[in-house]
Length: 103
Image (cartoon, rainbow, N blue to C red; front, side, top):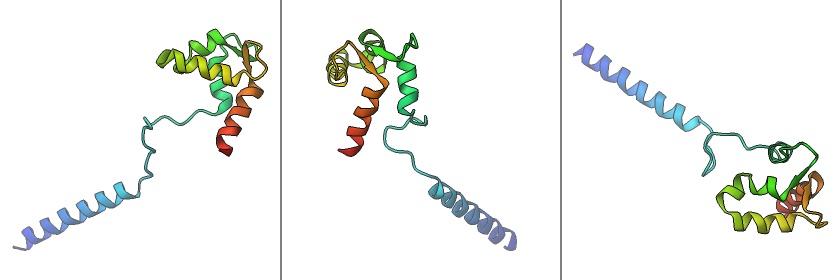
């Protein structure tokens, strides 16, 4: 009988410990696939394939949003290109990120 009681006690303690460990783990935001979010600078570098310091419309459209929804990507490019020179500078992208954070 002592063996059975000890067995159930150990089983119960391990289950409680397991649940506590799971509950203590930080939760990922909805839609997070386990990847850390890239900074604005990192995203800019990924889009700026020719490393000339600006993102052309072709580079923008070849990026993730352009591949997912070309219409939406084109509209967003137009909003980000404040000086209408056909490319997005790091400053234009940073200003858009700041506006989004402030909103």
